[in-house]
Length: 186
Length: 186
Image 1 (cartoon, each protein chain N blue to C red):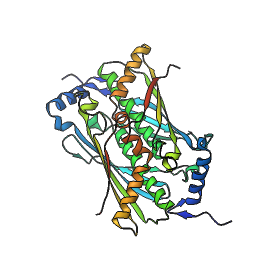
Image 2: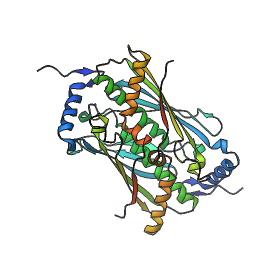
Image 3: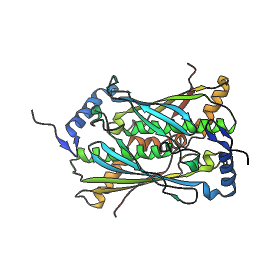
Image 4: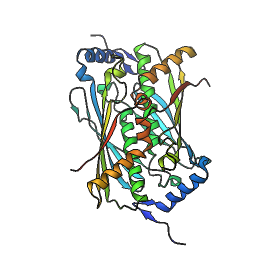
């Protein structure tokens, strides 16, 4: 049996097998991701992630990982961790990068390096309830990708468009994603 | 001079001073948050956050913090970190918690504990480009909050609604947030 084909560190045989499998059995493409959070006082909280669901079963094989969230002193915190809107940029950064690299790998385009930077604008009058007209969330997020590969700028642009198009976090942000918050009475 | 009033670990004098300041000088409410990302091979990348802008100046006082992002083996990775859509839930978890606690504190409601759990559904046929009709991002995110305080369920529900309403990450996800991805040719 030939060894699996690896491009940019991505096993593209496994990638194409997954595509074939999910075409045949769409239920196996349904994943559930989860986090828990515990408030630690003031603006400080700790989130923990361990299990997820998919494909077709619970996956409990990973160790739990915890992440502290806080605000800098100017935003009433003690810098015990990054703030939530910074974690959102982290999520976005890894997601577009992975989507871009997976897309390039599927097309057998070799990449030497991918670096990116992210900046988002927030007007805190929204969060503080000062002005109902001011958006509470990010007003705009700007992203810049630098790609080191033997490609023209047009080909790099194509990769960036693919990364944006197939990134779950980007799509969660750009579209109106349904979100429901419930009181847990247990 | 009387000491600052602290409720739930939140300095509400500082909170109300910020509200007064931003009402008077709206430009000071404009913050910019940032991240950078470097691809490390396969589905693994590392995001770093350090500086931000606001209020009215660059803040370079924090140490840089770095976070690894990867996928589990079943999603072509090596588990070098949580995956991007899990970081999104972390962002969401800290954000609603902080907004809820800040709101309670401003109303001088004492909280003993706040815990929450988050679950989002993703159909990977979107990411893999198998079905154009399938959303690429989260199809739905469900959130459950448990609040330990001397409050009725109705009062707890009110706090949860406030947390949801004033959370920047929630609003970034629920609304269509403008996002632009550019090729950095430098």
